[in-house]
Image (cartoon, rainbow, N blue to C red):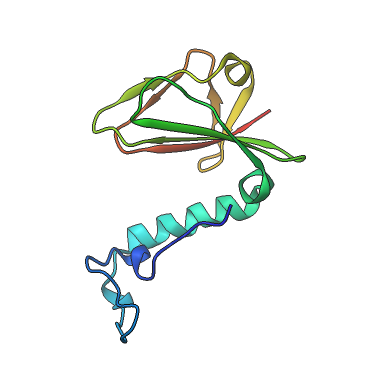
Length: 130
């Protein structure tokens, strides 16, 4: 899938960009932390074939504040988890997923999914499954 980033979103603008008139974005005063996070996420996407063109399937059920989906290509399988909750949530993916070894694609750390996973408030995880 192709990420959709609104013009100026990567520097945390607070107004809606005009579609019909010039609306300059002040790139120098933007939030560099947010911009760096966008760069990191785009790099993860570009480096992983399943995130670019893999099939997609729902991977987590239960809490409506946590979305989980599985991207699968010939080369790899990636679990994406996104928490929209204001507090920590414990999620348990399907057993076919928890039986696999995981690697966090943002940090490179090993991820054990066997007992589920704690998701901090407003967080995400992108995990390659082996």
